[in-house]
Image 1 (cartoon, rainbow, N blue to C red):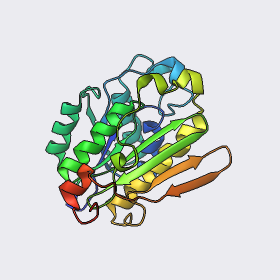
Image 2 (cartoon, rainbow, N blue to C red):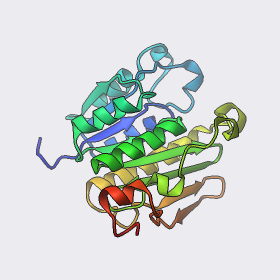
Image 3 (cartoon, rainbow, N blue to C red):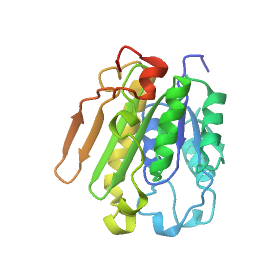
Length: 234
């Protein structure tokens, strides 16, 4: 293992996390931390493609790590059963791993996406935050000097305004497409090739096959400008 070998941290091993993990493996990633304390549920198997019926009830992170190890000779997949509903635990994890780790936020919790963004900004880290619902998805790559998630969305929307997965529907191929796209952005970040993409919100209109990149302009007063790029947010 060399010092330059990228380290990826996937938050959530569900509908987005499973394809993101597979995408990372296809890109040759061998250092992956899987952060999830949930268990495999039979109702989610259609979109959580790393698991099968025999895994129901098992810890997602442990099963996912086992599948990745089986898929690659030198895969080093590490399990971290950290409660993802605790922002302070996430901040402590990023502090432990350092700014060289590439984080992929793959949960379905809007509040955690903002917590991940804030932790990345505070630590000068790099990461990808994504979401999918129905036939639409989105992803944004964040790195020091770029616009961040809060530049696009200042705060989580009220819970009553958010449609649930049951209301809007979750299509397996849709979340799979977004998860793979997130992995692509993460690999680009790790290899220094995401400067043009970082800070732009990519909206994936999966029903029509259109990807719309929205200009990543830092929002005046945003914490990402105060922390790492004061000139960009002035």
